[in-house]
Image (cartoon, rainbow, N blue to C red; front, side, top):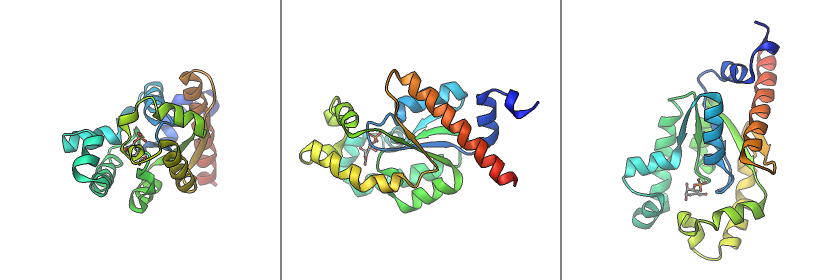
Length: 196
Ligand code: S3P
């Protein structure tokens, strides 16, 4: 069947192959919420790196930070993601700091399709403040200053992802549809380029 007559879903899955769609970006950017909706739409498995870390450690992310500290959390995070990336295709939501790790980022760039969900500061801030205890990094001082600082340092690294998607206003389904369209577009270009 000619490619233009297939559904977006079929085209995306075909071009994706065994790669996973890996969602990166700041805490509160919607990696989990939008990731679940995207997975449902594409009928792909959804996995959340933080949840997998919690399963492996038998405690919450907040407790891992409290009991073992951030370096141990980052070691666990690297190990869990290097396993998950071999189990695709899936939609994989990363924690906000995971893509900063050079080895993790290389594994993802080599084996997955990374998508940066880029959301403006005020939206992020408003969302993360709804669950104040959930993000241990924000409990160490003024959350607005910490988030500003993290965002400034991290954006150039998030920008190394394969695809950048700016958030759109309105219901989450709008963002999910926008993401599906951007994925379809990106993968079609990628497949034309590799065919040449
Ligand atoms: C972190 C973000 C969190 C979680 C941990 C560290 C970060 O995940 O992995 O608290 O460094 O930005 P979310 O991005 O899902 O909140």
